[in-house]
Amino acid sequence: MADTQRYRQRMSQPGALIQRLRQTDPSTADWLLALAFVVAIEIEIPVGGRFASASLATQASALAATLPLAWRRRAPVVATTVVMVGVVAQFALKDDSLGTALVAGFVAVWSSARHSERPKARASLGIALAGFWTAAALPPTAGPIYVLGDALWATGITVGVWGLGRALRKRRLLTLTLAERAGRLERDQEERSRLAVADERSRIARELHDIVAHNVSTMVVQAGAGRRVVERDPSRAGEAFASIENAGRQALAEMRRLLGILRTDREGLALAPQPSLAHLGDLLDRVRETGLPVKLTVVGEPRPLPAGIDVSAYRIIQEGLTNTIKHAGRAHAEVVVRYGERDLGLEVLDDGRGSDGAANGGRGGNGLVGMRERVTLYGGSLETGSLREGGYAVRARLPVDPRAS
Image (cartoon, rainbow, N blue to C red):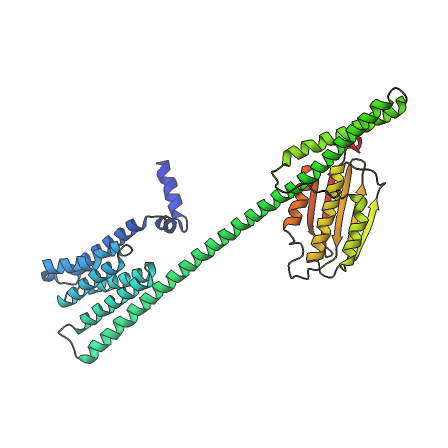
């Protein structure tokens, strides 16, 4: 009882019945429609007052004019042909159940136009027009003028119904095409984002590989030096061992990160030295050469940073300035580097309005993906977005372990 009440409540909601009908199998829906027309025409025959006309021929023509609607999608031309034969037979028998037969003929034409390719739709239209013209010309007639009037009336409605079906078909195909295109664009965007993340991780892995290799090389050199002087000069040996400890700690931390993101890379390892905040002045000079005024503000006392964080900080500033050059138009930029006790804060700010027509704050692409990957790698945070007074801001925070500095 409770299930019945819940079902009735669902069905009473607006659009619930229509939604369920749309989910019905098309062949089942066609059969239901055909049976509805059969019932309607069987009711119309006695209501028309022609009990005497309910002969075998009348029943056969009534079924021919309605039952083929069950095949209106699978065999539209055949269905239209049989329906029009039934309509013409109804006129020839002068039966009073013409209303339902005429509507069935229009439905057959509409269905063919709505669900068929152009050749079949045109064939169904021609068959329907020929059937209606034949029915209009059957005797007894009231004269050529009335025959022409009936033919034109049937032609106008048939062509209108056919045109409506074609228009709905085009709209449906357009909707499907747009939906498919949107889905394809969404998949392409996801693929591009995935590739951008993979490329950025490979780039980070190469950089960390070089850092680890450098630290290990330093450890080997310092170990050799400490071994040679440990007996003659213990203080120098202690300095060497402290350097080994520091380099080993950094190498171990970077190795953990490297193992987390390492991907197969066909390219050889870069031989150029890795960039760092020590090279920030050169980067800003190159940016100024592009025509973008940029100001550097350093807050706190600069100090050596772990190599991986140093490289990532440089790359984040580089990507932020690249976004400014691409999207901000005529603007001024400012880079802020904050040395905290346990973190490193980075800001890239501009006052641009977006010369490329994109809404300010809608910047995206591989640059932001790369920043996010680097910040996530070190357990930091990244904020990007429009400034209230205009412009755009990139703010990043990278945790720094003082013992690894």
